[in-house]
Amino acid sequence: MAFGQILRKVRLNAGLSQEELADKIYLSRSAVSRLENNRLKLTVEDAVRWGQATHASEVVAAMLCGIDVTTILQNITILIGGLIIWI
Image 1: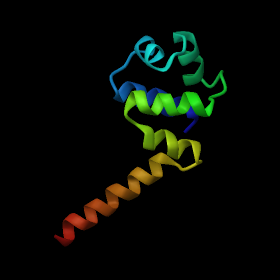
Image 2 (image 1 turned 60 degrees about the horizontal axis):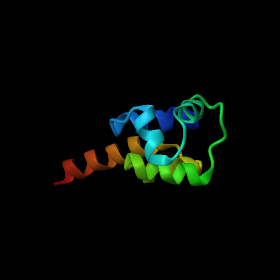
Image 3 (image 1 turned 90 degrees about the vertical axis):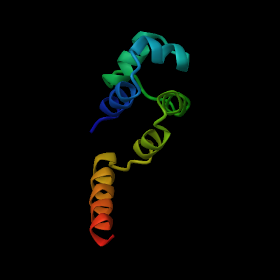
């Protein structure tokens, strides 16, 4: 999954419009759009603010570290499912 797709998903999960997020992270709405469409390079500073504003810092950090968030979530789901069976 590309950076832009992840950024869009965490924004939507936080219930924020592009304009609302832009106000929170001190960017223009067009910059938010360009980041979500992979047409603008994401800076670390913008990524940190994006994670904080969307309450998804761990997802943004994993993305920046090259960790496949989808795979991690699938593994956690399997692990939790396995733990439930053991209980």
